[in-house]
Length: 124
Image 1 (tube, one colour):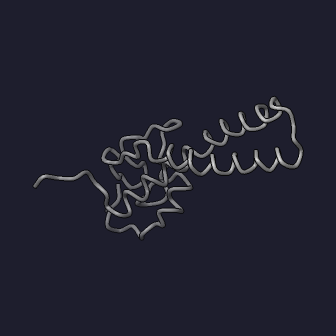
Image 2 (cartoon, rainbow, N blue to C red):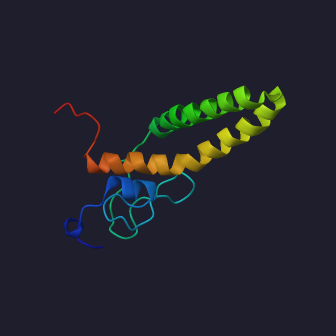
């Protein structure tokens, strides 16, 4: 383990979108698809206080939903395909797009929590 004060600041966007540790920018942030390890393998940062909750899912729904609906409207106006074409195009794109964006968005939320020192409210 290294001294936590020896790390140069890492951009939360670089660490977040790269799914790396928000402190050192080198260690892996995920153990599985969405599960976090106990601590960073490189700098020893404790990941237990970080919780992204439903934030990444909400942002993905809003952002990806906007683009999918816009693309579906363009395809409908230009080509007027039958309904089954829309289902075959936008269903898989929505599912795979959501799954592809979930890890980077969760990692970005955790990196922003670390960067801005966000924590639960305290009564004292």
